Figure 1 (cartoon, helix red, strand yellow):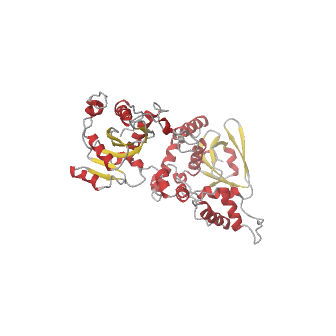
Figure 2: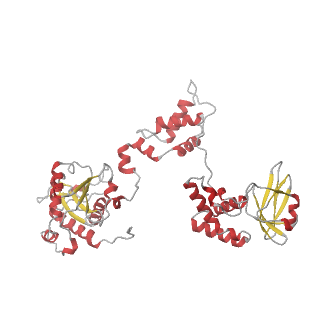
Figure 3: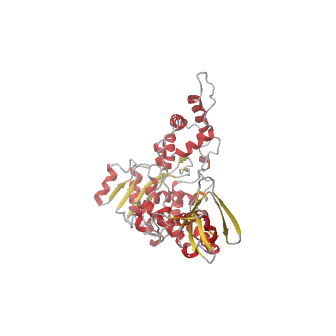
Length: 452
């Protein structure tokens, strides 16, 4: 082969032969052709007596080869010599595919000028893999795909054919899953597999046929086509899914509370038993609170034995009251800066509780306040007040253990009766709640707050 005729990106082809490639480092690599399988090499770089080529069929990493080895090859013409990356030819691809092509080309673009330098090439491959969070094998794959074709379209992701018709065994598996697994009886996958064999792979006498799918094939089919949403709803019910398994998407609170003045209302039963003045057990109190959605400030609270409209009335009165005087009535001295809130919020966000939908509560709109009713089972949309309850209970639980605090195992059989430990009255416990709210408003440190 005449060296003067060699040019970069030329293609050479050979059938039914054997060629020896010599990499840097004196390593011998043999590429054998079997039958009519072709060998096609592309020239990437030209040195004094060697050329850098890449196998366009196997698409392995480029290797150096003596020019004399090309005597067994003939020059192959290609339809389009791209040479450089032509981004105008991507107009026929969808935006997602074009984005993937651009991302993959950006990964290898820094490696292309150093393809002929093996040490530098290996170092850049490792650096790009670490920088983009992918494996070095993926970087090598993108690089070889582009070098062998010199066409940026080769970096497009391969489309998977998902329109394959199900086999009879797969139809039997799907039928068994729909009939026995996706039900409220919550059968195990092993039991469903046994029922499938009984229904579809037994003869008239109930004997198992010679050919039937294994449990591993059944489990693979289940994991391939199973969706968690369908599984949760069919086995646990829609309401359970909406309460506990619904995915959290969007910006949540920041979507409708971009500034101060959006109050979130909610009530919860506290995990502690209280007594009356004579020492008799009364029950667990209900804490109703209003929390500002933007700042997280507790605007007011109401502690009572029963919820409903009366607790809301006490809450509204507490919000507009002077917090300094309110705390002083319990023997707690604070400054106005510790709890500076004595006005109603312009918007009140509530759930679909009956007390919030009553005509009595709707009268508050006469003051110009807007009420926003959230759909059912969406606690994440009022996460500020939900987290407020969680923080307040976490503050006093560790300090009041053994004084009526309810532990997570209180509903199990044979556990300690926490009602016998109750020793605090409502007035004593309200002082503790006030201290917890003051700590929540003033001394709580927020780490990693998502500033916008």
